Image 1 (cartoon, chains in turn blue, yellow):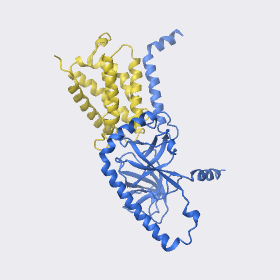
Image 2 (cartoon, rainbow over the protein chains, first blue to last red):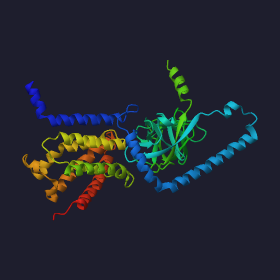
Image 3 (cartoon, rainbow over the protein chains, first blue to last red):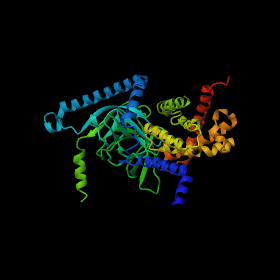
Image 4 (cartoon, chains in turn green, yellow):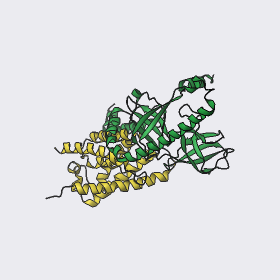
Length: 278
Length: 167
């Protein structure tokens, strides 16, 4: 007993140091697992509130750019609307039934990024929307130029987003066109403009310059959201699938207004998918 | 009185780190981590529990803002723990000298060595943990080098500007 006390007395600083180091390591490892990172995140009212305050200052610096991108998006949406209207006018109006006309599968919520990280291998954003605004975990986040990430931590009025610039992110994506071969969009942690589209089968025909869009095979992202263009194709001979480098449309350094997309049929799809396991 | 200055200074440093320095992203990804000077300014005491605990807490606050788990807490605590070894080795102090030890009254050359060693160790551990895998080791080393240089430049300019000249 005396020896034990002597031991603790002698190494008290080292033991204390070791204990705190283990706690820090625990937080670090926790931050890398998807559903468990409960403790240290910027989606709490303290850090979220402070980020909101500082954001009110920095917002003024790029009002002009924000305006331009909003105007661009407006123009694009107006064009799309015209196209849909003309189709409806000419052919489909008579055969449209009410249920498909008013059927809505996704809702969009506007949010503002109050914190954006892109300098490490595991990046997150913080948005000024939370549970109060109907946001939940595992919802898609995009802006007018393309995908941004998936929500992962939530408090009453803030939400943390796992950016696509995070080595743990994986998003279902495919090449725009007739083929429906899909792969996983991941990031290797190197260049923040370039993502990797993995597991595209080798028989799929891919050219440099093709557009990559989300595949719609997950319950998170709707199909057809823009991602980027194919910039190079590396097909190693030994594997059945090739890895494709994708240059993003989005400038991940400059994110301000985003949409959080919630899938109204998520629960329904999940229920069915889980039933079939038995 | 000195203690109050220290506390206010450290809080300001924390906000400076998370709101300004974390967003510099020089050349795309290089940030200075000036908060490491917590370890240099914290007074040397015989009782080391306050140093260790506050270093851990300070790092955790930086983590809270940067969404990085516990990497800042881990690395800051580590240099806080090994600080005493380097004080003894670089400045050649014995245990009895430590109670009156002050970084300001030491010659610049030794201070430079001491600060550089601890900063590089801190940054190396930080980026190794941030990388969270054994791949891309060259990236860790490059990050350590660039960020250390950035931090050290800021630190020495800062001390040069803010230090009061002896009258």
